[in-house]
Image (spheres, rainbow, N blue to C red):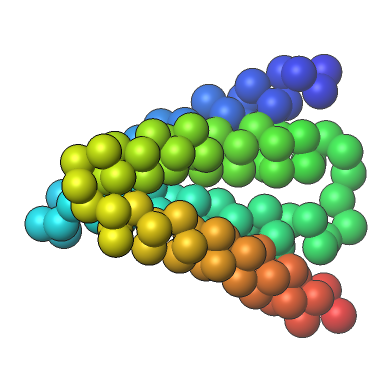
Length: 120
């Protein structure tokens, strides 16, 4: 049952990642991967929020592991960072790595704090 919940969450998260990434990137005429950055930060905030709530294992399997796992993408982040470095945009590569880590951790903390404020 847990595997099915993870798969269902991923079936929703992966297309949303793709559509969100494309929607954000289409609005920026820049080498910087704003689409991937945005979905990763949003997914980190949501996962921080979910992790702070008293949730059942099934809910966390669906929403945390499945949905957030498919919404965020470390592999694309890694690929785009290396592509920037190889294409000579080393400053963007370093900024992407540093900003993604800092913003992801900050977003997860904010999600956690929001859940704490909402749940009491």
